[in-house]
Structure formats: structure tokens, C-alpha cells
Image 1: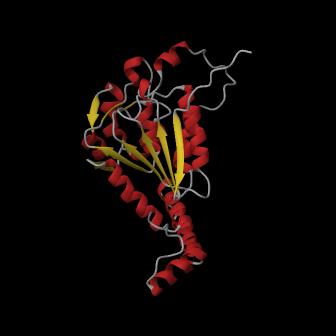
Image 2: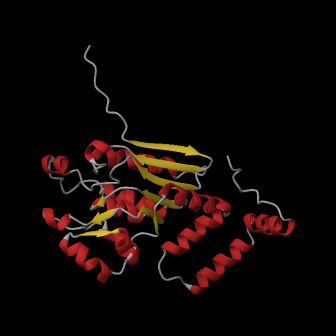
Image 3: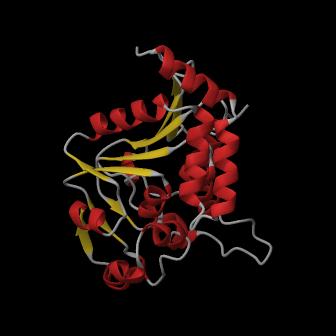
Length: 257
């Protein structure tokens, strides 16, 4: 009987002490957004969007974080019909921004095109000071369309105009100035570890509510007042204030390993 070769996984998800670490592990094609990688990343995000996870770290196998679309695969793929399913990249970008747990991109290598979109969809973006970026879409005859949604939510369009229209390469300092990244570090792992520790110090439901506030755009004062009152009446707030008064860690704190 003939055997069917099974592809090795190229996205890994490990959950330890309430933290899901998702690793892009396809260095042979620079972690390009192949059908396999996108499919497995969506599955990993579904696993991470569970109640036992309070922070998500999106990491990668060096040397490249993500080179964007797998152009060899895309150039030979059949054109989708009118009834094609929802864009899988859109699903990933939406999941990263909407899941309850804060998401952190840990970037230690170059990022291009669609990879920038995945990075930008995370709540916090930590990049090595040596990392470079480029929106190369126009140079192959397309536009940064789907990824513009999370990117324009972070950055003013005028600072994106030149990189979008020319495909020019820019550095980490420029990316931080435009708002594309939140942290530039010479030790990405240590910076991410500090951010994770801070997130786990907060009450899970309060952190999730704060993420929603950050993501919703201009807040409505009446809605925010109602949210504040509801949170102050919550079990988490009662525990947090009691812990403060009693000078002890709150119940949601994860013991340090």
C-alpha cells in the first residue's frame, strides 16, 4: 500500500504558565506566507484564544520574521472564484487584534510586506534595533491592501505614504517614529519577558477589557463610565483591592518559575 507523505508542522504553539508562544518555523522560505503557514497560524491562534491563555507571543525561527507572501506559490495558484471563502490573512489579522489575551510580536529579523501586517496586528511589537522593514507590494504589481487595516490603525497615513508608494526599506527607529512598533530593543527576548510579566500582573478580565478600550477607537464617555462601574463591582476588583490593602499578591498572579 502506498503511503502518503505528511508535511511537517511549520507553526508551533506551546502554552506554559498562561503564556502561548507561537513560532513561525519555516526558515527555508524566510517564513513566507504559504498556504500551509497561514493555515497553521490560524489554528495556533485558535488554540491561543482559550481561557487558559493570558498572553500570546508571536515569535519566529531566524533569520527572518516573515518575508511576506510566498510568491512562488501565489504565482502558480489558480485564481479564486466569486464564491471564494474569506481571505485567510484577514482572519489572522482579525484574530490577533480581537482575541482577549494581549498579543506581542517578538521580531529579531527582517519583515516584509504581509509580514509587517501580521506584526502590526499584534497589540505590542518588540523589534531588534537592527531589523528592517519594507512594503514591497507595489514592486510586484499589487498593493498593501488587507494589511493596511491594522497598519493604518496604528500609524498616520502621511508617515506611511513614502514606504507604501515606493517600497523603500526603512529601519527600526523609523518604524517606531511612525507608530508601527512599540519597542526597539537590543534584547528582544528580555523585553518581551518583561512585558509578559506586566500583563500577568493584571487581572485577566481587566486586561481584556483594557485591550478592547485600546482597540475601539474614540471612546464614548457614557459607555466608558458604565464599563468603569461594572469593573469596580467585579470579583476581580474586590480581590485586587483586598490584596492591595492586605499587602499580598492577588489570586490571579502566576507564580514565577
